[in-house]
Length: 255
Image 1 (cartoon, helix red, strand yellow):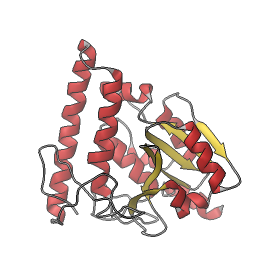
Image 2 (spheres, rainbow, N blue to C red; image 1 turned 90 degrees about the horizontal axis):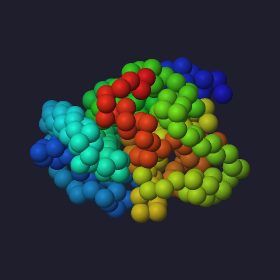
Image 3 (cartoon, rainbow, N blue to C red; image 1 turned 30 degrees about the horizontal axis):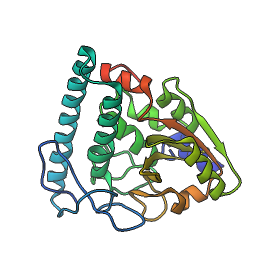
Image 4 (cartoon, rainbow, N blue to C red; image 1 turned 60 degrees about the vertical axis):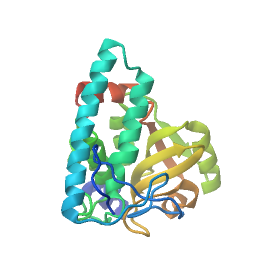
């Protein structure tokens, strides 16, 4: 517990392709853990320089801001539905923002704001990618919260599901039952945080992994060594969180 208390205090528990019009970066399918070159559903591209990665990420953030404004105007005028906003937000975060970070090393004190430059702890991975998605939040304050308090902030008043099970198999079964297709925040008792993605009925953990490969990666939840170390979890919807999405559209403060 002392180790995890330290993690909480510091907010720590908690290659790239040619640049496309919207700054997309892709990685391939084929292994049980996806990291630098590996992420479910994406196409393999060649390595480029860290400067190009930075440029790609900058372009992605610019495009994300433009997307938010278009969706806001469309929602205001009645030409864009909330369901469209949910899908667009999730796709942009999962397919465009997060893949830049695959392979960025984890460290106890990592808080880089730039993919592939420096290192990043699990809490900062969540807060930085949400901020770069356009959510109005303080990435330092969010990263330094405990998993349950981080869940409360991201929930914006929506339900937080607590899962307590004796075995990983039972926990996986309950998490599967509680979730639908889309993206969630997942907190691990007092020691870790990440994204939970349900895609085509499968559960994936996207996180800055303090175990192998000791970097940002996506892996099947049931195969995650980190997941197997815990018996208490906190789940908060992101894709289906209307309060959070309204704050995103209107640039209202989350934290």
